[in-house]
Amino acid sequence: MLKKSLSFLLLLGAVSLGLLSAGSVSANTIPSNYSFDGSKFTGPIPYYSSTKSQKAYIWNNPQTKRIHNLKNYPNTVWLVSKAFVKPVKGKNEVYYKLYSAYNKKVKGIAWYGYFKKSIIKLPVLFNSQQAYLNDLNSNKALKLTRMVAKLFPNSKINLNLSKSLYLTQPQNAYLLNSFTNTKELDLNKQTGKWSVSEYERMAPSKAIKLIDQRLTELGYDQNKRNSMSDYDIGLNIVGYAQSFYKKSDLKTANQYRYPVTLPGFRDMEDYQACAIQLGIPK
Image 1: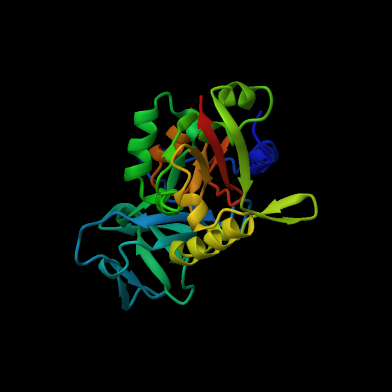
Image 2: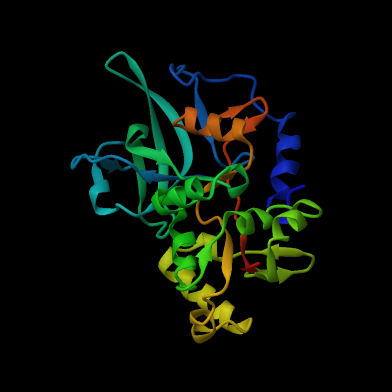
């Protein structure tokens, strides 16, 4: 069973079955009536620029003036609030209305082909330590996760410890059986009965400073963390990204480059995850 950090995904998924639009889109063809409005159900969808073109532009809303060049924003997360179809040379093309996650004044209209969804494959979907580490080291969406890992410079990242953060009893107990001195560090702030994270809505350079402060408050300052060479760590840091714990949803999200709302699936974000699992291997 999934922990509370992802529980609202299940709730929204169930509710969405009665709210999804009847029309669907194909991954290979774009119908003229395709559209996406992030103000309904999901909120904006996070993307990264994936183009190597030096002439990839963001335009003003009437699409009459170039206002930003994507080459100047290689590490920016773009939040797509709306998507629409525009016929270009007899072919349907999707365009995004978007803005920078770090500066809402940087906004405009851009062609969808310049972007790739910011997607995290959650640890529960990995079957090997090496595959998990390879993804952690290469996935742009995991930038904040990598930065948090560096706060524990002498500790190794462990897949089972990371998986344990997404599961409840008895599954996580089984995963933790190979460790002693286990302790979960919840980096989120508590508001009533809900755990609310603020870090993932920030630029990583700002979020990591606050996470560092939070760890110090919990008794894990940098000197303490430097001394933890006998510990392994697990990470549950989502960042500005969609996070998937079902293979079928991950496949669909990657299949459609643009945001979609389909029966049983819709693009969405998860901002709730921000925790670290500590443990000394037996």
